[in-house]
Length: 375
Image 1: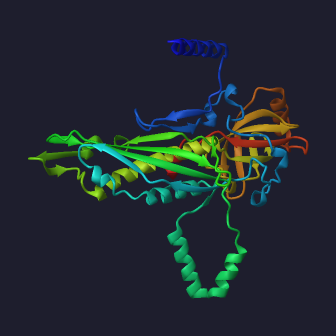
Image 2: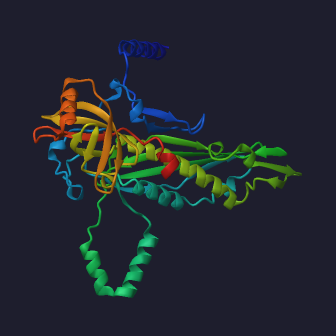
Image 3: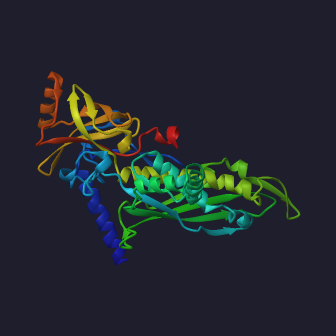
């Protein structure tokens, strides 16, 4: 009871404090995946930002910007703009269930989930992924050896630098199946993905990035009628083939894909893309990085200045990347004297940041249409 009273007082205090703030910043919105499963958090469109929303995202660390060389190919280790090198692991799945279909659920191959995870993360180009697809790598090296010879292979290997992961992302999965076992019934599958981030050299489990647990249900990816089956005299008659590994795998694959999409949106929020602003002309931005730094199409980015360790938001922009650069449009300027001064200079010509004050753009989360168009 004492704990309950303390909790109630804490909630009341938080509510009173929240009431004192007129318009809290909101930079993300909820994209409904299902009414009972995990949801994907996507960036709010720059066109929907209020003045209070224009602030540097919570997960972006401005410390170390003064160490940056602003060369994506050889960025300083202490620079927050440096892309992290990541290796991924999928642990053996735990299986639990009630009624029919447990055996077929055990047949799913977790290595497929690992490769799917690598492909999705590598595709956004915000991280450098060290693949665990050893079969493909070995096959290609063997083909090269046969076609070019041992000397050429040795030279090629010596010219390449083996990537050393900055951290490891490890996923544990729990697959559950439940059915009523009556004459007419439905299969209900649940997939839970629990992530942990580890330093492979100190053996420390890291608190950042915190990706949490993801839960996906079969009803998120299939109409329930598709998982209906009929039995007679305790024998399968028709409907969903719950005992067939191929049919079950198709459902679990779709569930895993949905779970990885949600995981990806969490990673994109906690590890945002950042570029340096080279110039502002009117509302138009010129940025020094694009796809090479993981900037995504239709990216919502907050523009801010950085001087002597102080951060001042300037505006919010909608950004479109090319391969090595990007352009953007400031949709809303921050209501501050500094933003007004920069805007005035940009309207008269091209505003270029000085050596003493640099201007950056940082993403606030997964672009609104990214899940539909790219995953």
